Image (tube, rainbow, N blue to C red; front, side, top):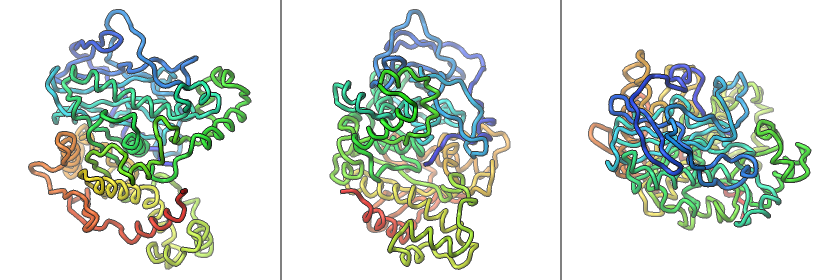
Length: 508
């Protein structure tokens, strides 16, 4: 599963926590006053609680209102990250450990506007396979986007089994008769907080864009399908991730929860709640996913979009040219044509000739490229085209892109890898004093497209190559690479084949 947080190299270049002294800035929110900082007109608030700590009896409960505090709460440092397992040391996404806690439902705000200024709002939802990540990762710093005229919010949400456990006992105690999806309910709670409070930070609650990458993009996709998110956002940006494949039913998810409890020797919900959070986060017998629970989701995401029951808003979606280079290891690939054919037949039974036609392999040297291409397209490129098609069919503008630029760090051999566009979307390449001119230009262009879209629902603006809206006939998309240009019918033969594969596998 995609696990998209910042690379270690980026984390070292863009520190997780800033210690620079700044002037104070006080705002009243639910719970009390928070004191942020002001530097050169930029207002920054870190670690604002948006829900009560989900600990003790509140573990595996929907987010509850914050507890009031006395005095003014300092908001000049990020909160702990939600409890999560570390990335393996050899992973491209490994990062040095940061403080973690089950008490982690906090958000952060960057703004260059005074209260009441009504700037567009961009709410960032981090990736990490719904098992890892945090809103405080260095490349998610919202300062440079805020300087372009938006208010930026990032947030933490519960992860892994602490955020997505469904269980019969949890369902039974729920007034909604639902369980699971707590991490997604956290996101809804954060968006409700934005609606109530963002005006005090200079934001316009009627112009909220949610944007995210990998599992953050999954989240954006799911929120579009959720009735709970109605009215909470007005545009959506998805980078490399959609959930149009089968979403587990509540009964299916409860079976997973029962299996997890058994693997941990917990014979009751009380016993599960008594377990250390780290033990639950590191449990291997749990597959994190969003559930059709009747509360967050009332139907499959794909069916909700197909029947136009989703939040019909402008969307900007896309994926990267080399998504899979950092998500799998060539050491696991078959080394011979015979082994490759056996693998392909298992993966695409009865469709091997069609597969060969769109992912041709003539020699052993072609095997890795075909596997990486098929993995990229099945997990990402097709999902994003599907999203653009649903958006366009519903009558809302949709804009499709492919990111092809190869960053100069940390490893050009990875190509335009999974997550490599994030630092450009936040316009944070400029934080490097030695950044190449091409990367600075592309960072400015990409972030401008994102800000323009958040402002008006259209990414186009002065000085930018024109980005046509998606339509089913010509299928235009914008290639975001060393040059920015319009293309048509992105990987059409490959995606059409994979769409037929998906149709065969679709659960009624």
